[in-house]
Length: 225
Image 1: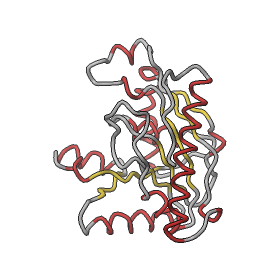
Image 2: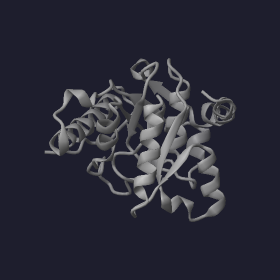
Image 3: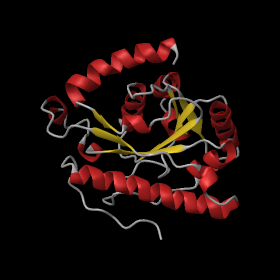
Image 4: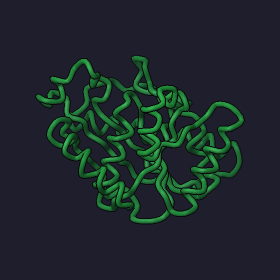
């Protein structure tokens, strides 16, 4: 973990602990070393720092890099900020390959990459958008295990509702599931599709766990068929 990340951890910890009251479950599921992909659900702009914080304070602290849509770089100061926070622009053009190759290089060096399998923020009333193959692509090309993750109560945390933070009406919980290994699946596109289905099911199961724990109150949506 770099010095920059340690400083950021202390800084955001002052915000997350008093105001958001972030609770982390399954810390033991984060591998101690080696390449790692983390695949959370995604509803708000707070999700990347929340997941980054959760990984940094897990039993095996990890510094995370994030694949993010290039749209976030349209406002230049914001783009520079998130780039400083280890965000990697994922373009929709031919240049997308450069971002993926950067992520693959980080993974091959034993780094941690966070990628949202829904492909973007879920703005619908459904619990999840269909998962895309991007996570499987990275996993199959690097052999990196994938830790499914679920962030609770992030659908109601808008900038317009800061009182929910201060009063902790809806504290955020982050659940980490057991790693999925690409080596347990067939090769090629068929294997990537099966892996993606298994990943979505794993994230759904984390949501169900949150419901059983009484920290989430939402209905389950059907998994991929």
